[in-house]
Length: 113
Image (cartoon, rainbow, N blue to C red):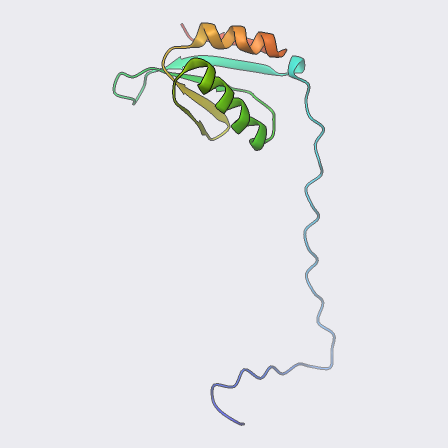
């Protein structure tokens, strides 16, 4: 052996089966906005008394969620983020967001009080 740190690999005469690459995820057809039930709710829990409007139920790709969030933040003049599968907008903007989503063709539903 030329050295103990040699990276020489030995094989048997049998062919070793290779793992197949996992099939790509099938491309899902986009669900039309009017077929989606979007839930808009106000949340104050674990936020130090600050209000956050949460938008759930959007079945759109992540890239489109980011663009939608940017548009909403610009229109409302506030901050926001994407957490898990929901959009969070700082402040109480439920009424405005209900109107915006209706204009976009979604069926928004107000949850909570």
